[in-house]
Image 1 (spheres, protein in one colour):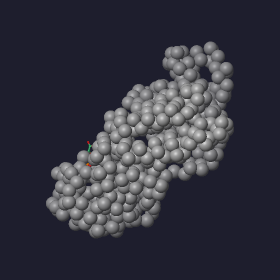
Image 2: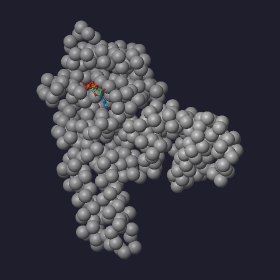
Image 3: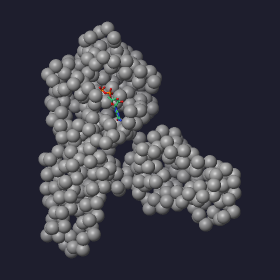
Length: 446
Ligand code: GDP
């Protein structure tokens, strides 16, 4: 079961429970059994699921809940917080500090997406003003250095490696030394993965760790690994001091639940997820946002992070002010489309908007969605200031719609579609009135 389906099954179970006239032990048990089944089918580790069930029952003691209590809400909240608990080890990840040299070592099995992820991690930080550098200490896999070199060159990130030297420990030591001298503040060391967990691999990692003295060790794991994830994560945790986890290939058909259980094995948080082969298909992972999204509750904090990431600093206070007042004009929609197009993979952003599992941005059709957004923007280019700044759609009478269609060379039908889209978005935003911090309360991740 892929994670979207898991979310659907859990919300389905909660909805069925909500539809029951009286919520008694039997209804609660049925709901919990449905959730348990869905989690197990998604490869979440058995012990974790059992624990979740036990804890929810402990929180939701139906006998103790007086008649006035909203049992549905209490159960929903318990499911939410217990799912968050599975994904959140309760301690924040150690984050490197900009401007101060940090060494981050990547570990994981071959094929997990380690080399790709090293570059994504470097690129992500480079965009935020860091000075990253990549060291290829994988001499085991032929082609590893070429791959890293190619990726690093594309992203204009300095790299170090060797075709001749076969000792990964030596390369790692030299690379880190060199980039320290060059004042890079984020030195990323890619290590070899080999095919399976074996003593030689762990010994090599120990030696590389000894020479590079990493501030953070990141364990990279393929999301399709299933139930084996727990043991693999634990083996890596035992042999190196894993401080954070990155899960790759979350875009595929993997069940994902197994890899998410890695948090429990390593007691380290998942900090990013990989959602594609490209450099920017990489998302900050936050347990609470993830569970909110999974349960269809929308991901406000993730969305705020994206706003901070894409909207120029000077525009942020004004935008947040307007949104917090619940004012959503066509001009705001236009500006947001502009920002979203800047971000590349468009679905990432709109998928986070509460209530928006949208026909505007169906998953897997990002190109079409971008074209549609651009078309909408062309139509909005033909609108007057009065139209763009109004929140009253009554203003948009037949003759105005015809004028916009003519001016943008699009059909009247399309203009109406665009206005429908605006209506839908405006409805979502109006509901969020008051929930948005007025002045950048949630700063960008650094
Ligand atoms: P390594 O052996 O662990 O260094 O793995 P690589 O970085 O060479 O990745 C193995 C394969 O997985 C490559 O084909 C990557 O393009 C692909 N890959 C890595 N991360 C992702 C991801 O998040 N999504 C998808 N779809 N493919 C990925």
